[in-house]
Length: 159
Image (cartoon, rainbow, N blue to C red):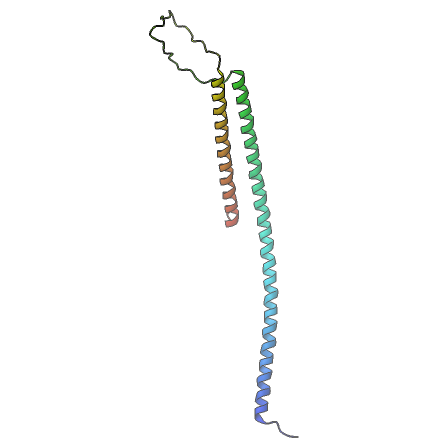
């Protein structure tokens, strides 16, 4: 038998060590990948749960907004009905100004309210619509702020 020369023995040892390192490195990466997939699955599960919670909170806010807007619409319709029947009027001045040529009335007569004119009814109707639009805008803004704060609280973990 021929003895192995020393350089071949060194090369064989280096190849053996390098091969062992590469196999260990490969299995280490596979283990790391498996751990990462488990962590990703956990994070996805947590994100889905948070997403469902946020969706339910936003749905609640949307329901509240619809109810509030329906109430505003009902109030607006009722006020339009009052204006149309003449029970909702613009205030008249408390001190009616008499012209200088008008005779002075004796006693304390109650001023009669003249029947509402078409221009007064249209003004009342416009005022009702403006007030209702303002109420709707404020309600939407408040719902938006509430939704934002609720989602922010959920995301930051301040439940």
